[in-house]
Image (cartoon, rainbow, N blue to C red; front, side, top):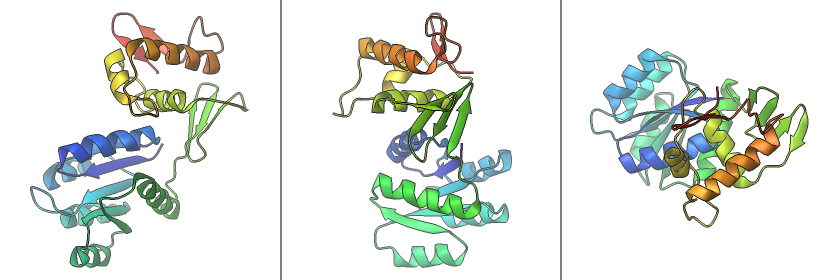
Length: 221
């Protein structure tokens, strides 16, 4: 699973883009400014950084330089038509840029292209006898592909991106929604968890992958 550090000071973008990247199978950390980003870079390694050039404290150029010292790829998020910032970013080693507002699918494509160039693409996630290829959007059990609906697949990725963490039902409801854009209700969530268990568990009556934590929610170890 490829890890991404999203550096952005707009809370709405942090929330929406962070959730979208997680749903696409990336492990996402966020930082709301230059100082926070540099602290994150000192704490752990990343496969790629998404960096807004304009930050409340400092700027994305400094973050890019710090990332390049560690040979991490960087994609800049820029204001539309800001040619100077684009040129300056590329000159200091940024690998790509995308102008706001951007199309999410285009951003994912650019991320994967850069990761491939660095050999950092983490498209296959293994869990017990389950194998998820996030590039192809496929899931296999013991080598045999199984079909998941869009919401079942999204739910599985939420669990995989939060391994070792107890997820409450309310948290899961926030993470998934149906294709019409309406929030999934509590009863529907129960149905989807049951369907997912039926497809990925060896014995759905005694689940070994998606475990119930009584009174708290669910966990995938």
